[in-house]
Image (cartoon, rainbow, N blue to C red; front, side, top):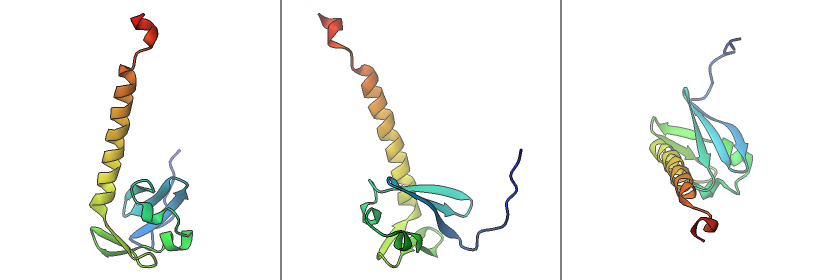
Length: 103
């Protein structure tokens, strides 16, 4: 079954969801996750302030209520960094052997 889009977004950027770990931005046809661990300025902000985001340019976002500006590339880079960290951690965990193998 296919879903049909009801209409286009009225904003070029909008916050689609907020969780205890971060929030999702809809930016055109792309969805980006903004983790609080990488962007702590948003962690204690009220929903209203996080949701009030403006795109002063195609590659920059600004939250006027928080006076926070981010390059879209920095959000993408943080996601790549998180994926790499998780990959490294899982590789390290596979290298950990039980002590019983040595005795």
